[in-house]
Image (cartoon, rainbow over all chains, first blue to last red; front, side, top):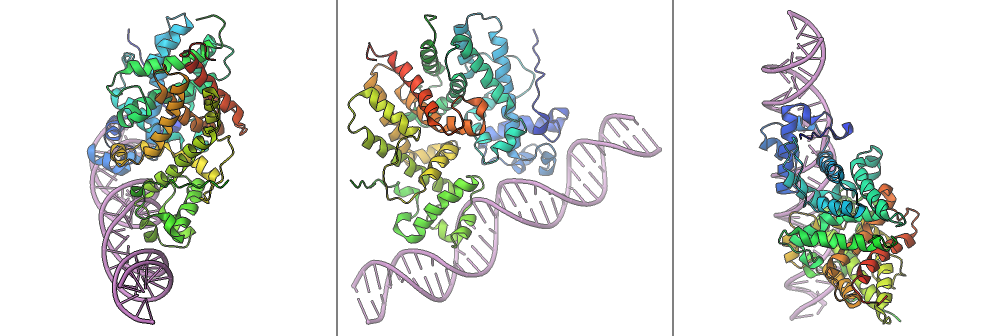
Length: 230
Length: 230
DNA sequence: AAAACATGATAGTTTTGCTATCGAAAAAAC
DNA sequence: GTTTTTTCGATAGCAAAACTATCATGTTTT
């Protein structure tokens, strides 16, 4: 079976569609790798232009600035995540199984679906881990939000909240729990790698502890609001 | 009773102690307010110098760069938080009461202790909310950590984890739970203000929902690991 | 063949981030 | 109570970042 992503980042994100030209694709693919290597703060269009042997001005024809570029990358990430969730939970009936599968996906411990994006999926995941909060922790957050640019993240969060609601309809904080799971699935491994005093999930890249941690608090809190479902 | 903070930010954080001079104090007090107003990205020493009618170079004599300056502010925040926790839990015996009190403190719903720092506590809290992750989500995180500059945050997290361990000694993820509580106590209100689709805690500044959300998942998960304690 | 568009090449602006120097004034040491 | 050190103001300057503008050239579309 050949699944194809048709979901594309919002038009407003890029000045012109990077998937429509060789240069555009190169900017995205190589830009992803460069940002992964040197980090958002050190990333500049000038450096990217030098790497892919083009000019700074050419990149500015595709993206207004590096913040939009990061948001473009994260939009891919969120779309791929949500798509993976949809496909992976398709054949599951049991709510608790669905939640378990979901947690594996957000903890980056589910097999990647085949895609033809040509994106470095590992780099994309690590960028999401280290840089994603920088797209919304800014003074301009409300304007960006008004342009609907966080919709993919909100949709993903909403879908997860929906699963929680299915499992425990009376739980009053499904969306907060969903954003907590999403954020912690990123942050706990980052802490494990760099600030191990802040976590117990282990730096050895072993995702089982992370999954166990996430499952433990998700099911504990949801089970309190189900009558003998467990 | 007149409690006095003697805890001071790490020496390495500032080039010279800002509390030792009029200018230094002005940099910190007014810098806090300016960063709160325009956000970390737009904050520059040049702008701060203009506001307090001094020169850029003079500020550089106190702080290497704005990242260190933010870290200095957050160190105050974490120290004040931990101190508040220590003082507020002093007279509590019951572990569950301690945790409840702790959650109120991190949710910014406990009365501020008197201090003589002269810092705008509200601005400090909002900076912690919106900017704190920017101090550790950087490529240089390991170097900064080696300088012990995250110690106050780690200590705070460790103390909270200790309380969880006291309540439920067999729970295997006390530190992850502590960092989750700390991070979500910041992030959920931010979402409520700017991205309400990601939360249920309500934007009306009402902290009761946040407290209820945090308590719900902390006690749910910990109670699973206590034998009939609840 | 003409019109439309994409890119390269070059240049230039403003802001940021930071360093250096020098003299005057204020504080500390003697 | 004056020397010595420290602090700060004042000015300068530089390299990089974050853009914008223009024009020519090549490449597609029509």
